[in-house]
Amino acid sequence: MKILFLNGPNLNLLGTREPEVYGRTTLADIEAEVRSKAKLMQVEVEFRQSNQEGELVNWIQDAKGKFQVIVINAAAYSHTSIALRDAISAVGLPTIEIHLSNIHAREEFRHKSLIASVCRGQICGFGSKSYILGLESAIYVIESNK
Ligand code: CA2
Image (cartoon, rainbow, N blue to C red; front, top):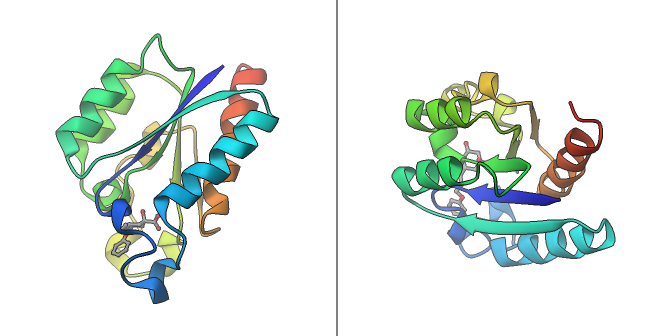
């Protein structure tokens, strides 16, 4: 069982800038949390981050046949990227959208996610735990074959 975690633009800055908004946990800390939970649950995970939309599109396209589920925090591209939406839709792998913050409780421009309707579900607002919930949901999707 292999799960691909994708992270979008600026998430590499987590824990180093604007701690009042995004906290002090770094993306490397989150990856370590996900990896330790994945080990307990006996699943394989791959964890990637890019600031480039096209690279994320390529990774989604290449995931077919290699991963069973994608868990994606597309960051700001969630609100803007038809390209990511089309890639998720075209590839047809179950994809779970996650966010650290509750995007619906923030500025209006964050309320709309262009990828939400092609994703299996959305998890937001639980900080780094959104990633663990994303992992658990991915395992649920695989095991229940839904
Ligand atoms: O809550 C989330 O996970 C977001 O995807 C984070 C994105 C934001 O654009 C989405 O609306 C919600 C921002 C990620 C950038 O993270 C930063 C970390 C430190 C300093 C600046 C940005």
